[in-house]
Length: 151
Image (cartoon, rainbow, N blue to C red):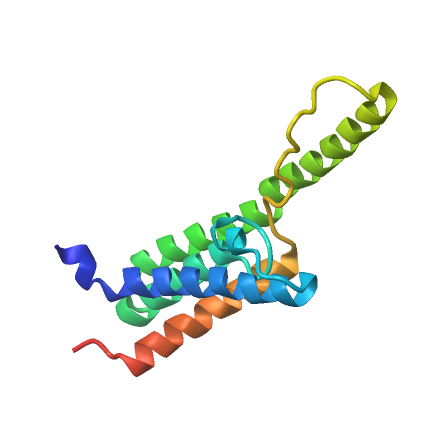
C-alpha cells in the first residue's frame, strides 16, 4: 500500500500524536493529574490540528518546493484549518460554556428535575494554542526531513 510509504503523511501523523501527547503533560502541569481522555479530545494546548496541517504543508514544501501548486494547496488548507480552530470552533466552545452556566442557574432555581449533561466546552483554540501547534508541526516536519532524508 503506497500510503504506508508516504513520508509526508507519516510526518503529519507524528506531529498530531506528539501534540496530543504534549496535551497530557500540559494538563498534568495545570491540574496535577493525568487525564488520559485528553489524548483524544479536541482543543487545548498545543493545537494538534495546527501541528498536523503545518507539518503537512512544510513537508510538502520541502519535498515538492515552496513554489509548487501542491504546496499552495497544502498551505491554504492549513490556514483554513487554523482559522477555523480560532474562529468557529472557539466560538462554539464559548457558547457551550455559557449554556452550561445557564443550565446550572436553572437547576439552582428548580432544585429538582432532569439533569442535562453539560455540553463540551473545549472545542476550539486560542491564538497562542494555534501558534504553538503550528510551530510544533514546523519543527516536526524539519526534523523528519533532515533526520530521515528520502532515499
